[in-house]
Each structure stands twice: as C-alpha cells, then as structure tokens.
View 1 (tube, rainbow, N blue to C red):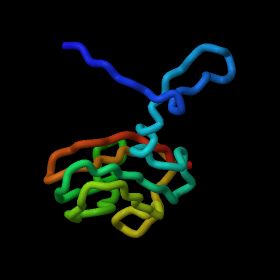
View 2: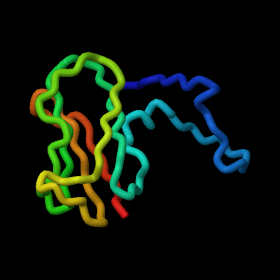
View 3: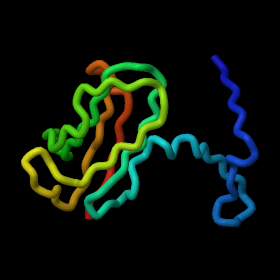
View 4: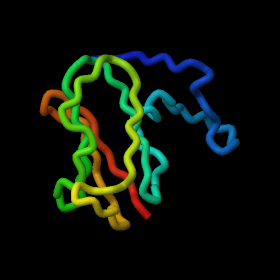
Length: 118
C-alpha cells in the first residue's frame, strides 16, 4: 500500500538554517501539551475528530493514575484546550518527573504522550 502526502510550502521549515529541508507537520503540534517541560501548569490541546465521550488522564511512569483531568465529557468535533494546574487527585502538586497523559474516547485510548514537570 502506498500513500501520498502533500505538505503545503508554508508548513515546511529549514532546519536551523542549514539549507537542508526538514519537513514538519505543524498540525501535529496541536496535540502536544505545552509548555513542556512545565513548572506545573499545562495546556493540553485536543483535536477531536469524532463526537464522543472523552477522558484525559495523567499517569506516573509506574502506571499509577495521578489525575483524572476530564472524566466522561461529551465533545463534538473541534479543537479544545484543557488547562491543568499540575495538582493531582489528592490535591498535591505533582513532584518533578516524567508523566504520561492518555486521551480516551468511549474508554479506548486514542492518543498519548509524555511530559516533564520541573
């Protein structure tokens, strides 16, 4: 199976002015939390393509659930920005370290990644 991708010229960037073309899909940036690393407060951009019930959870690297940011919210297609203050489910600020976030739709994980808190 083959696929063809067209990246508009305004979405292509030169890597550090070396003259070597570097293709970067800036649409991907919508799904990455920022700032990363964070001092506690973060924004999770979510691009929702299908209506459904969504959750956003934070786990430590041991797999322990640290924060249920959104639980069972119904979202229509669109772009959302979820702000989180870095506080876990016990009311304490998360310690420095690496954490994983999971976005799930109707109890099926559809997106995940990692971020740092310093």
